[in-house]
Structure formats: C-alpha cells, structure tokens
Length: 302
Image (cartoon, rainbow, N blue to C red; front, side, top):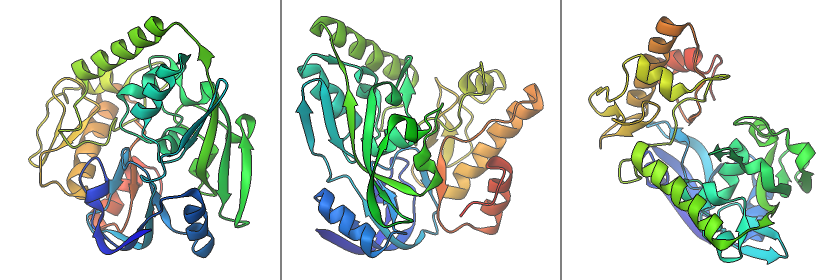
C-alpha cells in the first residue's frame, strides 16, 4: 500500500486545510485496513475529508485515508459498500440497478464511512433508512464486530461511531425497487437543489458548518442574523447559503474557527439559540483555537 511521511493533510480534506502528519497510509483492501488498525488502533481515519477541519498545525501520530477502499457488490436488493466508496458513485450504482434510497447521495461529497458516521441526510432521506448492518473494527477489543441497525444508535447527525470505539470497514444497505424515471427525477432534483444553494467543491468547503437546531434551520437563522455573504478575509460565508464556509485560498484552521464563532455568537445574540457545530475539528490546537473550541463544542477538543 502507499505510505507517505510528513504529509500535508490539506491534500485530503475538502476544505483544503490541514497541517502535516507524521505518516499517512492508503490501504487498498479491507484486510490491509484491518491490519493497520490492529497494529495501531489509535490511527486517525479520514475518508473523503469532508465535514472535517484539521488544524493547520497538523496531527500527531499516523493517519489512514480510506479513499482506495471502493469495493461495491450487489446481493438482490442489498448493496455492500466499503467505507471509502464515494456517495455519488453509490447513488449512481443503485440507480443503474433500479434501486431507490440513495438518491440524496448524488449531491454529497462524502464517502460511505463518513455518511454512516454522521447519519448523513437530505431531502427527507437518511443514511440510516436503508442501513442493515456494518462490519466494524472495535478499537477496545482489537477485533471485528458486526453492528446491526439497533446497535448504531442513529439519530439526527449521530451514530455510535462518534464514540470513537468503532471504525467502519464496510456496510450493508437494503434498498427498494423503483421505476428508473422516478429515481432519475429525484436525483436530478437533489442535484439542482444543491447547485442552486450550495457551493460546488470548486470552492473549498467542509459542508454545513452547523447542525440544524430542533424544528429550525441553521442556514435560516444565520441568514436572518446577517451572516450570508459575510467576508472575513481568508474565509467567507457562502453567498446563497449562510451555513457554508468557503476557504478563499489561504485560510488556516484558526480563520475558520474565528468565523464559526462569529456565526455562533450572531445567532445566540439574536435568537438565544446556541448552534452546535457539524464540522468536526481535529489536530493540534493553538491557544486561541482551544478558547474557541471550548465555546463552540462545549468541551475541550483533542
């Protein structure tokens, strides 16, 4: 497998931000991935690098990037996908088999590992809707376990994977047969909606900055608070959707966190609502980043 040292992690994140790691591994098979985790269960795992803000100071230790783990197979109405399979690819794969349930993935930059981790959703479709089971690596017991849907503790933007104990290797989904034109129509509508409101990946971003609060929309609140299009130098809030932060080219992790703090404070001041970050922060923090993360994440970040 490919192994690189002193690797700039900005190369594997959609936000194009991230300092160096000591070593990064690119396993090409699930067995290689499992072997790596057996040797060092504390390796930091990155999929497509979306929904992720890595410190400009970098990460200590080793990193695994799963983007080469792209095996997909079909068993009736069930699809088995490795953690590195891109969401749009899986959406198209399902459509070719006249299977419905993955139409919303067509507009997602994330991979299956990240989509299950976050229980990604859009247009009233959730990753958990079609989820059957996952083969995971248990960091505590250093063994392979099968987690069924009830084991996953799925909720809005939540799953048991966020505890850090389990690492997804591959997952099984059961979809439903549907007319090709209905699937195509839904995929097209999802793509159009994204293009009209959200930035393309030509503008480096990590997806939504904040989760939606109960019965409301983070984007709506941020828009009403005057944050849409707000320019903060190296970073800005997207012009047509106030819940996206764009790296204008030379942004650091501190730049992004400072803007997130302004967005958070604006909504809190105007509506007394404390938005919870959707973007995951990881890496070596500066003192200022520690201060911001204590506010945004309500705890000390590692």
